Length: 107
Image 1 (cartoon, rainbow, N blue to C red):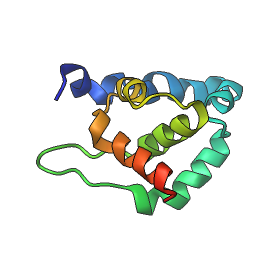
Image 2: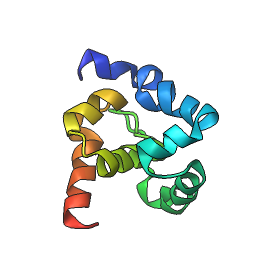
Image 3: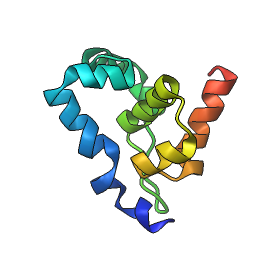
């Protein structure tokens, strides 16, 4: 694991930017994600049972809200997997590859 990825819980963009943006600047949140905070929360509650993963002895699971955030940003911005990997402090081949495959295959 890359050293920069080890501090995911402290340094990812979801914690440092999007949480604050949700609270203080919902218009900017909407511009970034193309979703209001209310719609994001509703969609998350619908998808949570399907996208929730569990921690193992080898890795911490990516939280469901982070997986949804990455997916929405990929769809909204078209950023590269490398960019999203660094922003969210996720291994590019961890969840991001699965997100890309699911979007490309339509489910």
